[in-house]
Length: 247
Image (tube, rainbow, N blue to C red; front, side, top):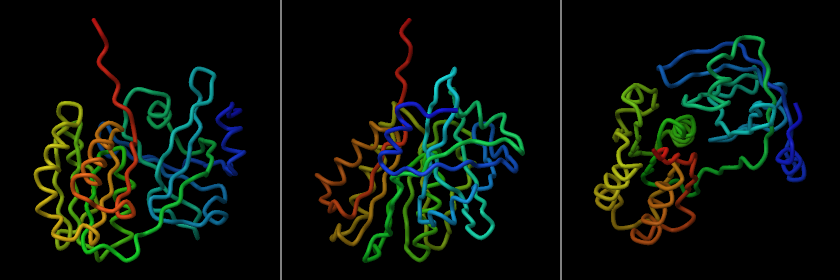
């Protein structure tokens, strides 16, 4: 399958192409699926870093469509990792629902850098949802000794069962049902974060990865109203909410 103009752009930006092979699949919840794969030599060629992600290529009615996914438990020696899919309508979720051992999928690695903050924060604040869960878990694992508060938005009731890898002795997990297009999450964070942040915002690190609108609202709040320095904030909108259809 050709990658169209997006593939050409990624090539110009030094994207590297690989082919992954499915070795197994696990239905974590009714709306969340984990696919295990071999890496086609990628991990040995690129190395591994926290929250590392790849662009997968799907067929969308005969046209190439790419989506980014974070690696779960990458093992460079074995050449294996998993990918996790928050299931909804679309060609990526359709592929994940039917993926079987032996299936292959093309991928491009480009623009995936992340560096653990230096100096390490005295406390980590993480705000995300099922789409960013693999990155949340990778982030927590990259700073295992750092206390963290995690706000985890749950669009569906079963999302509360998802495996957020928090440690009870140093991590606090706050699940927030998704309401009013993310407004409930913004409200919860605004109510609690100032009291948790302390007197020196430079001692903290805030990581935000929700839908694009919620991410923008929270990033603006953290930077402008709480005065957390730019280099102590990482934010990325992982998806865009689709407005309800008109009747």
